[in-house]
Length: 268
Figure 1 (tube, one colour):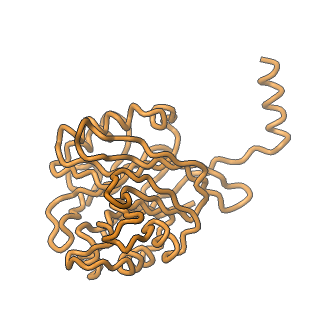
Figure 2 (cartoon, one colour):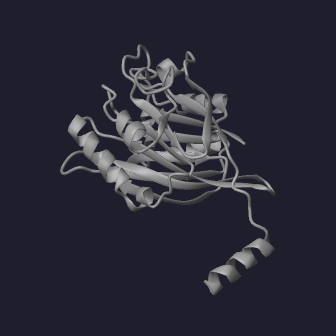
């Protein structure tokens, strides 16, 4: 089964023209029809975004029945952080604290999503949606916090897994940690490897490849691209990145097989 993933720092739906226009973000999401959408800089109940829950607004506007939020920064009124939208059920979600010392609060929203479209196809995919800090040393420590979290260390190497978001990694220093040490592949480069990333920031004339999607497990990369619609140069200060994967199925056990397995386990 193929799934499409989009990662986008939506900049609170405030464009480079300084106008709050959530309908532009919704239009971009709708255009790409991704199964999973990883959003960063999502306001909830903040005056600058008309006190809206932007995760809910985007989910409803782009027809996503499931969404989760991980709010990191507390303002005088409201909060903001990351949000994951899904066409498929989100089984559970939790926000992982990636804040380093007294620096700005940061986090990674972990969600377990059930990809299930028929009686014989069922697979869970683990999704980590993050937004890292502005200092290179801070970002390295934040990756350390992520990969030492219970949510990450409990994963088997063959578990389908995505790590995506705004890494703020101007010099592509973090990618080797994921690809060379943690056995991920990068889906947001012009070619294989990680040395030639899609440039996504600033949106009107990008010079930095800050937005990434990494993947691991029984997933094959089919297509990848950077969104370069005219509206994306204005809607946010980042450009979205999109990747499509072929996801292998985890075949459901029959009740008889499950019963046999339980009997064997009991005997052991």
